[in-house]
Image (cartoon, rainbow, N blue to C red; front, side, top):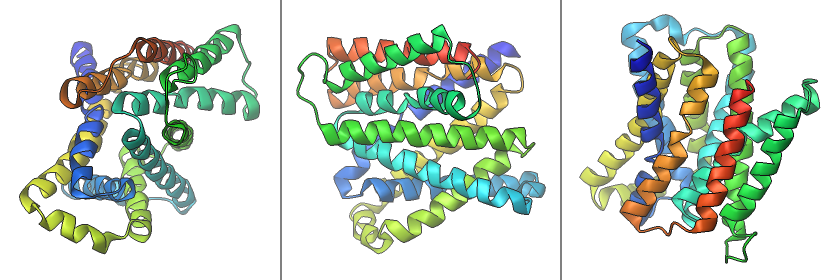
Length: 290
């Protein structure tokens, strides 16, 4: 069973990494980052809701005290994806996903600052690797020309992702069902998107090539969200969360490969070195139980 769980994690990482493919294809029709985040959340909410409706209706039940927590999960989910997509459009798929993967560093900073966790030598090395890695990936180190706004959005996606991780960890500690937590995160992200993404303006984009755009929208929701979430959840039944988190760093590797092969993105030495350092810092923190 463990071998199957490892395959689930690897497949989930490969699917999460396809975000850049869908974003790059859909923006050519005129969709904005906020609109893509809305559609991703909406498709994921509907698909997960259908699963809950036919397999376990109790997944819809929540306690009143969970409502605010799930609202926070939804807001951070929406912010993470939107910032990630903005960064992707301004820099590259590989740069954006690597910057988003700074999230464990921000979780560690929060844990040390507010939860009384010790700042160990291993954590110090992780922070150092992350700082140098971000400098290399962004181009700050090495004198490479870079888009400062894209780097800002990328790091902000990492901060938002860390908030999402912290809130979902609190939810798990409160014995909330992970599927219920994710279901309501998608719901609140979808509701937020309805107010901020100017939905009526997307109709011409969809109708310009309805078959392709709708297929891409549904595919983005299923391939980059719903399906990998289920695979990751199934894997956690047989392997520790730390091991699963470590294996999931295949996502930025996959995203980088997709960008190079499908969109001719440059794979520079500084990008590879920076990515290696950031992933090393993530590995060290996951090994440390964060």
